[in-house]
Length: 183
Image 1 (cartoon, one colour):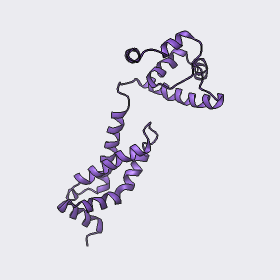
Image 2 (image 1 turned 60 degrees about the vertical axis):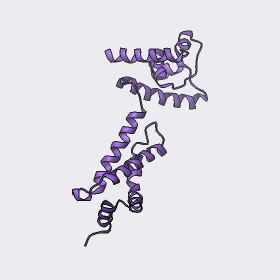
Image 3 (image 1 turned 180 degrees about the horizontal axis):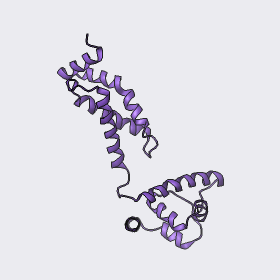
Image 4 (image 1 turned 45 degrees about the vertical axis):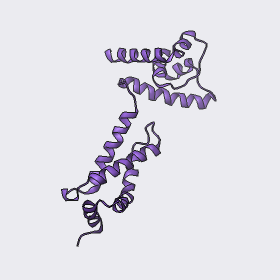
């Protein structure tokens, strides 16, 4: 005897009934939610990730062929993950940033959060450099790339670098990325 799930898939494949499609979406939404939760540590909001995963689920339902011999969850998992990865790729850095600079960004964001909580204010560049054990220039590169939002001290060179006009900032960032890539 054919189980309810298989019968529902066969009926949907033949009729493409919107009510059956809605039933399939409802039954499989926990899978989409589970996969969206795997990517919640990214900078994107969970609601956005869930919406993208839901779109991937609907695409998987529309493209699935029950006669192919694969379970729907196997097919849907790959489709939803692919949709999420494409979304994250398309909404993240538009310039290929060297891994070392990305790692420095993560380290800087963590340090900014810790120092802000400890000091009760945004940390100054000199405080960030001391906390990270790096020269201010490393911090400046990351701030230009990520706009972390540290406080300012009276160092005019630092202030000038952070106050660059937007177009100049883009040129400066691209120069930094090219210099890092050439190393």
